Length: 68
Image (tube, rainbow, N blue to C red; front, side, top):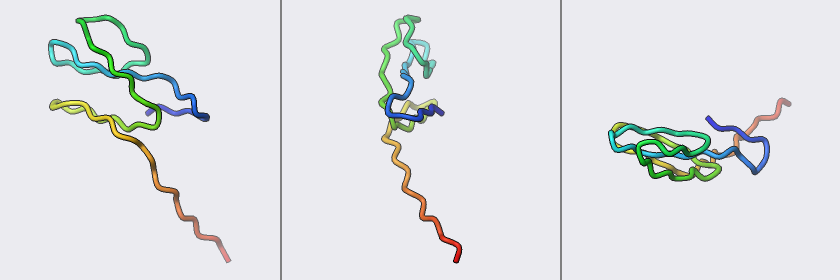
């Protein structure tokens, strides 16, 4: 989980390596010729053996009940 208290979240990148390995890192590094994809702020990332998914993360606002 990446957390920021403002609109400037720390950077995250994802890559798939030639050997099939996947990773998420804070800064890309050149290892095994990985092609890096920046993960946009407010995103939800899932990684499985079949692939990597990046989707917008926009949780619904909670409805709070007021005590009367």
